[in-house]
Length: 193
Image (cartoon, rainbow, N blue to C red; front, side):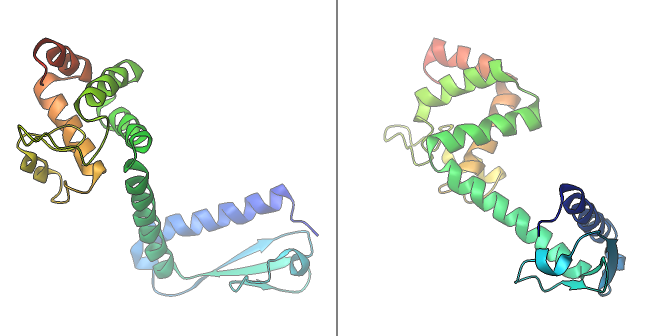
């Protein structure tokens, strides 16, 4: 038997509410919490075989136990997992472009026009290759920082982390030129920015 969309939504809302409470109020992380959800379906047949935290009672009551301290750790692990995924994706040019576009929009409110300029600029500089290095000048990375050690203001992993390079490059553009289009205009005039 399948659980209806309404029942899945109820379970999701309850789980989210419990997770939110655990994250926002760590003082409640003193042990398991119980959430009782009334579902009008046969949960024994619908529950996955590997479910360990779902205790099915008689009738249509399900008791779900949450340990908030474990959930907070799971939230932190999820954040690390997300960043790790972004890092691996950014190791190729398409992933780097995707990350740069979303980071620029979220942190600098630069839209599509500015991203177009940024894309042209960094394509000319490094082809969005985080390993790019100019043998004559020593400039390094996607944004071609010179000297490359400037990127340490973001993180010390600038040699191997395209996210660090992108964050530094966007910060540099904002501080020096205000926008990627102004930085690209400078690049077109002098072949550097």
